[in-house]
Amino acid sequence: MNHQSENNKKLNTFFSEEYQSLKSYVNSRLKASVNRDAEDIIQDVALKLFSGADRYSPINNVAGFVYHAVKNKIIDVMRATSKTPPYPIENIDFKLNAFVELLYDTESQAYSEEMHGELKKAILGLKTDYRNIIIAVDFEGYNYREISEETGIPVGTLMSRRHRAISQLYKTLKSKQETIN
Image (tube, rainbow, N blue to C red; front, side, top):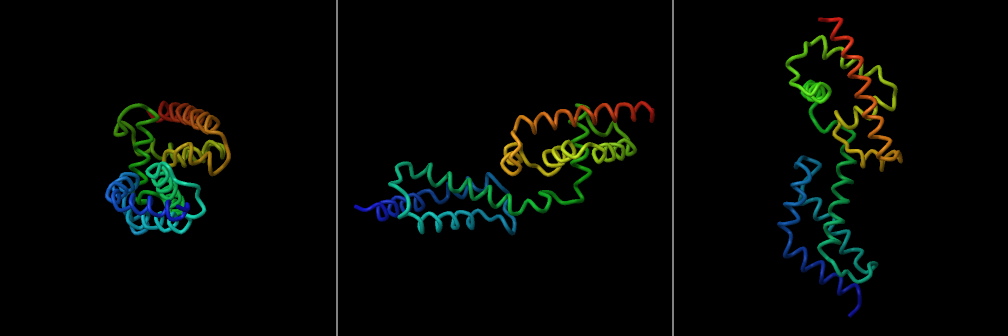
């Protein structure tokens, strides 16, 4: 039996039997929106896999093959829609509060509006590499691996930059808080 018909048969059987599991997997990875529908993603992946089945060597682990393709498609969709913030812009204060809690390891209600303003200024005052990593990780929701793949900067370097940025923010805001109090 040739590879094309064998691969098509395996893929067809897998998609028929595991469609709901695939749909659950995709939904667990992202929330549905206009641009992010689980069924659309699965259908795009299925179309691509079926149309290219003759180019693949025999597929032995169909589940792993399909789930890997679905995972890659999810990443592509998330990157394509990441030009807009993954949260409504009116929730920036919520993100800022969460960042204050991270910075001070305490509830953000303990800090005044003036301190929130100082935090915004301090973030904008960071050197570009530090500011970019803080915004990407803490406000836009990217993880280090995604940033590394996009920029070519090693994950360890990104983690170090974020750590140093948080340290600088903490020092800057500690002196501002002492001045305010």
